[in-house]
Image 1 (cartoon, rainbow, N blue to C red):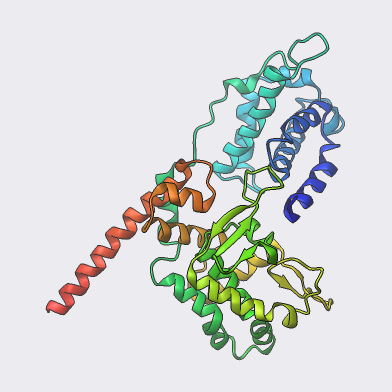
Image 2 (image 1 turned 30 degrees about the horizontal axis):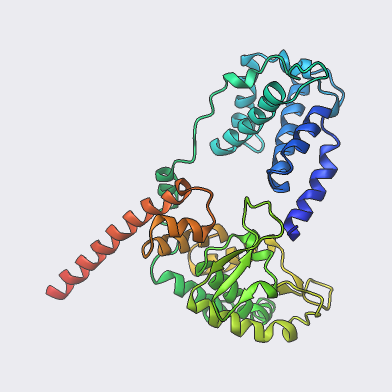
Length: 366
C-alpha cells in the first residue's frame, strides 16, 4: 500500500465507525474495488448529508450513526431538491456544480447498493424505496468544456523549459533581498527544478510523484515504476517513460539527495526534505509539493499554475506528437474520453501557433 493510501485508509477506519451500520456495510462492499481516498470522500459526503437530514428534522437520530433505513425510505423528492439547493446556496463553503454532482453521485451509489444489492435475512432489499433513482445527475465533465477552462492556464511550447529554468536559476534573482527565502531556495532549487521537470516530462500525478522511491527509477531506460490511480493491485507498478531532459535533472538531484538532505539509508523516498526542527531527510508530502509549485508559479507570472496544470501542460505537449491512445497510456487514464481534453486543447494550440507564424512572416515581409 502506498504512503498516501495508508494515511487515507487510517482516516477512513476512524470516520466510518460514526456512520450507520448500513453505510459501514457499503464501504466494506466497495473496499476491494475503490481506493481508500475515494471511499473517504464518500464518507465525508454522507456525513454532510446526514447532518443536513438531522438539522432539517428529516431524521430523529441523535447522531449520524443512528440514522435509519426507514428515514431514507421516507424521503421525498422535495427533500433531495432542498439538499441540492443547500449545497449550492449556503453562505459558507458553497460548492461548485462539479462538487455538487459528485456528492449526489455518492448518494446514488449508496442508495443503489441498499436497494439493488444488499439483502436482509429474508432476502429482501435493505431499502424498499430508492428516492435517488429519480434523480438525474447531469454530466459536468465534458472534454470540450474542460479544455475551455484550461485555455491560457497551462504552459505551452517554450514555456515548459522556461518554467524549469526559472526554478533552477531565475527565482533566486527575484528574491535576492530576502535572505531567509534565498537560503531556502539555494538549499532546494535543484530538487524543486527536478520535480517540475519530471512532471513536465512524464505527466505524473502529484500522488504518484510523492510515492516514488529511489528504487522505482531506471535512469538508463528513462523509466519510472509507479502505483497508478485506479489500480488496486498493490504488487504491480506501471512503467512510465520520461523524456531526456528529466534524466539530466534527476542525475543532478540524486548527486545531492543524500548529503544535502542528510537522508538516512532507511529512507527510500526519491524526493525528500528536512522538516523544521529535524535533522534528517524525510519523504516530501503532497501538500509541500503543491505549495512549492504555486510559490514559483506566482513569481513566474503564472499564478494559476498548479501541479495538476503542469500535468495538463505535459499532456497537451505530448499529444501534439502522439495519438490519443499513447497519450492515454502515458497519463494512466481509464478511458480515452478523459484524454479527449487534449485533443480540444491542441486544436487551439496549433491554430494559435499558425497565427503566430503568419504574424512573424508578415513582419519579415514588411
